[in-house]
Length: 278
Ligand code: AMP
Ligand code: ZN
Ligand code: FE
Ligand code: FE
Image (tube, rainbow, N blue to C red; front, side):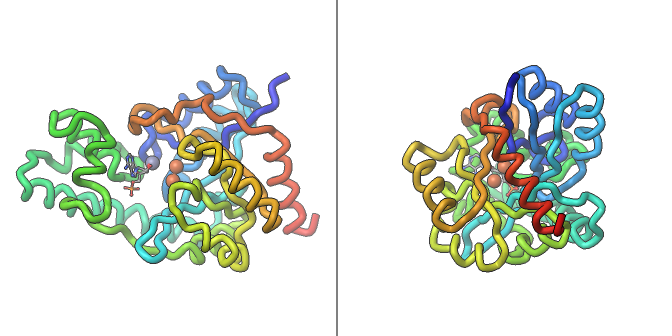
């Protein structure tokens, strides 16, 4: 009996390569008991994932990864077990999705001014109906031979401080946490080892943060140890996942690279029930 989960996966509803249906089937084939779909700033992939999960007998945890900003740092807040029909969450995510399109439009213009011959429709062809993002731009640059990897596109052009960068729609981590709580979900700080914002953890906990992502492909052994201990110190839940994007991310974030014990999923559910007074 397999008893493991992956609580951080992207689909084509944001910048993942594969459809929600494909992702759920792939996870089933790998023996996962449960997965969470955590697309950037959108819930659009959840319905299809839910349907496939029911068909093939896989547990789907509703999720989202909200992009927030604090003092120029990107802080991603994962929301688990959210109620998808929450009006306020949907409204803010719709605004974020629209502003993503505007942002990428401006980045394409910047790139053209820098001499990169790329068109917006080449980017939207890759993003499809999903929430558009920088990895889609990176993929066009890669396909056109301007860079040799997605990483290079980010390092040379698309990251803060680079010539084609445009900041995104700004919401604070506090707003992201509140939105998730209002949608009856569990807010969890994503990959803290990537953001170097450990000093924020006690502060975010005061604001309602309930967990930290301990296991992530960009966390080394020391990070895992540190965040495991921080979670214990602050009484926070622990989560983990592969952050799988298919080939839209050229690091080794493959499905199956992170398997967390199912008891951590049960702890999330227990927390939700506790908060709802069950
Ligand atoms: P966006 O939502 O448009 O800001 O893009 C965020 C996505 O870009 C996330 O999936 C990140 O993992 C990815 N990303 C950010 N920085 C890098 C990088 N240096 N190399 C590869 N992917 C990155
Ligand atoms: Zn992504
Ligand atoms: Fe993230
Ligand atoms: Fe992610």
